[in-house]
Length: 124
Image (cartoon, rainbow, N blue to C red):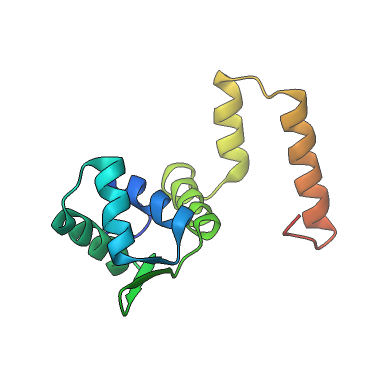
């Protein structure tokens, strides 16, 4: 099981949990019934899948975040880059820009990220 590839419904449930965590399981089942028309058993089955991937944990009836959404997205991006472009960010950007012109604001944002990285401020 690939921890960074989620099915459509796993993705939707993860987003719902990230938006509401920490959340009691009873409240989560209510939210899932409203958002997805799921039964309680479906919610628990899907939650278990996400917990098995290390994204969340069910601690005494409260679902808590184990992997922040930003960290999960970063890992997904890294995995995609590795699998598709051999880990080459320049390779990805070259492929992307062949089909879609980079906007001036995107270029400026990329330059700012590179400048911050070079200055040792990787979180900028």
